[in-house]
Image 1: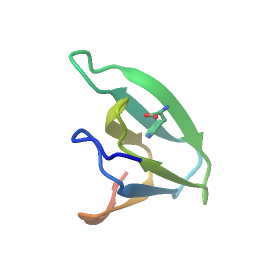
Image 2 (image 1 turned 180 degrees about the vertical axis):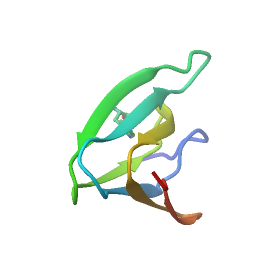
Image 3 (image 1 turned 120 degrees about the horizontal axis):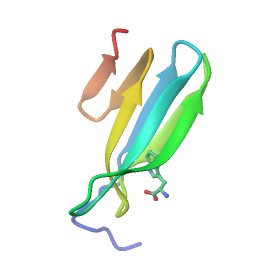
Length: 76
Ligand code: TRP
């Protein structure tokens, strides 16, 4: 697949450290709105990419996040 300038092939990994962690995808473009909300329970893992539709990802709750920039923790 042709790669687009707005995206890359990197994945981000989110591992929930408690129940009810929320992963929210925000739209790309002039409007920055929630378009997808995913709930994770403790121990569940979500692997996601930034796409032509998703420019930002917001994470609520206690989780560990791994990206190409390193690993971080939401410190809730
Ligand atoms: N349909 C969304 C998209 O292609 C799915 C998605 C990709 C998503 N990455 C995400 C949803 C990150 C939430 C968070 O963009």
